[in-house]
Length: 291
Image (cartoon, rainbow, N blue to C red):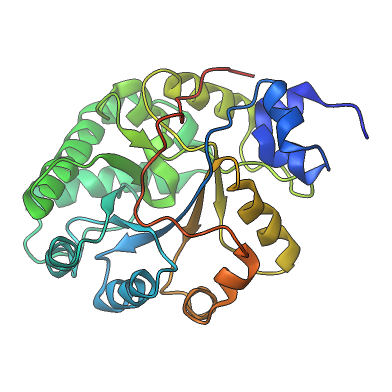
């Protein structure tokens, strides 16, 4: 067996270790967070459009999707919220800072402030990692408005929050302290050995530092795509035997919809069941070690 790269494990957690052929048990003894297993398949963009909501519901109904992340101030937000409450769909808040609010009843001031924030974040690949003091109030207003609207639609504040294009991890949001402490928050994508780093190391260190001790997170987070090679997904699903794993999906994408509703997910996951709802086990903990 190859020597254990403790820095890689600290940065990429057990997923990186497993991809390198290192056992989960050894990775755990090296300091990576491991909890009782759970495979959470979460569908983003609930409420963005009728097609998105309906396709996602089909995936929930067949047991291939555990939970959804709901958008506010979008064309299908109202109907999607009513469906979720009526049918018991586990819905968190999908914070939207980058795509235009399209609901007819979106307040004009909110739409304008969100456009300012979106223009900044979409303007440069580095904008997410740079705190902009001139937009601090705009960020605060747009985040608070979406949390408040979620509470109106769903009858309760969101227990978990993630972000459209993962902008909930932007410097302005995290440094601004706009997200309630103790919530479940989506972490960075976990690394795999054959992939290039998906975040600059400094930005990853910064966001992990802000997440530590403030929020609850899964052990690992992966995108469903690419669907090939199948061995990649087998490795991801296998991690859920011992760890809490979130897999992000967008059922409006035809290939992902077919994968989820056609049974391929269950075939590759083998004996690992898809969780019914987004819940962290009691042993899951917030990030506690910073690389």
